[in-house]
Length: 110
Image (cartoon, rainbow, N blue to C red; front, side):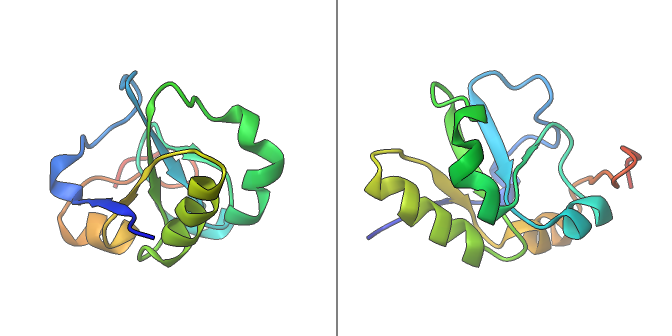
């Protein structure tokens, strides 16, 4: 199954006011607190099936994790249920390597 991947350089630094795309961060709470993309939706991977209704499926779904492994697994699961999405290639490791801003758990840009 081919999963679409997008490069971090083509994504906005802040998803707060982005209406047509949702950035879903599926990392664990401690990873999220250490640094995340402003405006991303945080649902840890294991919680996604139970919280699926929290996602805006009218928007393009982008999934991010640490390096892409969990994102790919989730997108394969969603594809079997008829939901399309794309993986952020390289995850938050690539995001930070590209010098893109992150927020800590307290919402402080770093």
